[in-house]
Image 1 (cartoon, rainbow over the protein chains, first blue to last red):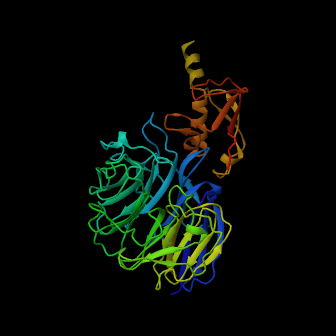
Image 2: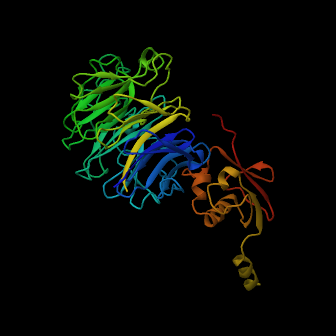
Image 3: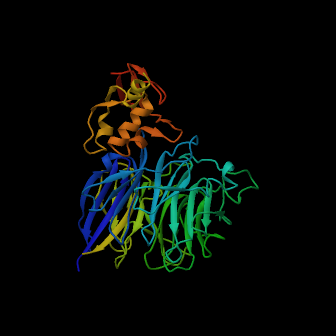
Length: 361
Length: 101
């Protein structure tokens, strides 16, 4: 069987697809799709190969786009993708996730969660987050009050985790009906002295689940990098050995629960660039005890870009591929677990998300 | 007299002429830039557009409910709301606001 590998790229000006074979040496780029709508996240249902792209247009509001023919044609819907009448309107879809049974989740701005059981044709608001007792005290970060990280437990469809800027990590064990904050051990440096470890209000940037099903989560936060070994009930700092405590994306190794990739930037008030203008992806193979910079093939000197929350991913091949896209529009790929890198598309619009799809044909 | 009044109520409102922006038309296969449809108010016009091209309501209106912030509907040259009445033969322009970036 031949393998097709797809990179699903969301940008400020539509979605793009890059396609390769298992060797991942050369890539064919297609796009832009979705009528160049600002596209925040593109994901695939690995079972069916259906693509979903979530975003929001300045004029027309939020929508989820869908392609069942690997990008050749797209449809769009936002039926039900709205709050109760009178509330602040949904501005955009920020994050998407597909469950094992094809159920689709959409995280939106202002922060909320919607579910579709008909492949994105219609949406139902799961209002547990809106009705959470802490909700009136959530305050948006600079980018807005955004539900940008959606984590589904592959073993238990009732378990979900979300990351909201700047409300923190919340978890549900009843399919999204009720939620509890899980931020113990994560800092909020921007709060007054003595209030730096609140129950909620942390500025989480990216939340990911390690493979292996043991409740291990990692998060890149505005204020530090963290690991949880108990489903987010408690968090330990893993930022020692990294050049800063600030960054946006995180990506897990597809098979090794101790393997994590981060892209630390130079700090939250220093421009949020690659440190010293030298691009690097930092990798741990021991769950964050130690870190190593991977730079081969990445621009060294003059690289003043950053990488946004959802713009780094791994694939499931052996060895694993690692990918990221920059706010300056460069799409970078590694076919050897981050040891060497190539820029496979240098001049895309600002990249908001990168995900992968591997198909056996 | 009563029968005639009832007959009149059963008829659709007189048609108005609606001009749609290109960015909207490309989202709906078969949609046209210039549409004549019967409507007695802007809200009714949106209903008719949504019936012709399902999903168009969500593109033009938010859940407030109101015409979206960066969509402008002009009736006879004046900015309108969903409740604005439409006279027979009214000229309606649906326009997207200027956008940066």
